[in-house]
Amino acid sequence: MTDRIEAPWLDAFEAVFRLCAAAPGEAVCLLAESQSRPINLALAELALLRLGCRPFRCILPSPAPTGPVPLRSTGASRALAGHPAVLAALAASSFIVDLTVEGLLHAPELPGLLKAGSRVLMVSNEHPEALTRLVPRPEDMAAVKQGVKQARAAQAMTVTSPAGTDLTARMAGAAVAGVWGWTDRAGTIAHWPGGVVVAFPAAGTVNGTLVLAAGDVNLTFKRYLAADIRLTIAEDHISAIEGRGADAEMMRRTLAAWGDRAAYAVSHLGWGTNPRARYEALSMYATDDTNGTELRAVAGNFLFSTGANEFAGRFSEGHFDIPCFGTTIALDGVAVVRDGVLL
View (cartoon, helix red, strand yellow):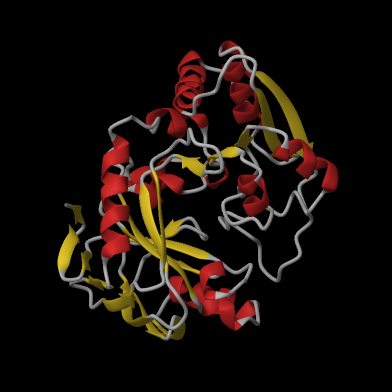
């Protein structure tokens, strides 16, 4: 079925662009690729025209697959591929609406665009119904900023759970960031839906056990786990994957397929802050209609991610994002999440 444009969806895009300070007469680049969701591109363009902006489309061919397994939920679009003309157009745009399939969040071209002064809103590749439910609100900023402040001041993050998780990350040297769903400052990026605090730990700082419990979510596979998986982590790297059933076996096979030790490494750790994001949402959409960003933002989840971490000098196309529920997350012994509830 082809979606038609609905008035509430258009209103949602307009509301978010207002939060991003889209101004009349402003040249706005709509960056997309051939496999981007057409209705989101149309909604973004119409909403910007409502605001008096001057949007233009930059649509690139979606890249051919190059990895040993399908690339999903990486946050690192390969569509730009360093294209000089495209990069020049992007650098000349004060506001970029990122509608690529995977997004620019971890793309190699992003630092140059931010340095040029562009502000970038990554519209996650979600169905517009989900985006409309998760339009950010001004009050969403406070919980994210508070979490970032606490994480930056901490010496250690600990994560525990009744399932057996006992994980510690030293926070010295970690890069900490937060996203509340919009950006109105030059040289910054945000994604919609928002509501996360994440820390990219320095090399050799994460150790312990992480138990992915039944009901946690592997967003790369877009499925709720049916059985526990026990991960042993030593100096940032998964050294053992214990568990029976399809979930553990798919994880073992996917990580091994890369033939890259960095695929086993910790990318980032953090937690969700969005009170309107729903745990059960992944079951409500066809896999083509969701990228799982909503699950990353569910308030009180522990977000564990593997793969590239530029702050630790590691790069890999292998990537897992796994929201875990029912954990306790503490910074220097003070809980920010207790038994899955955001404090």
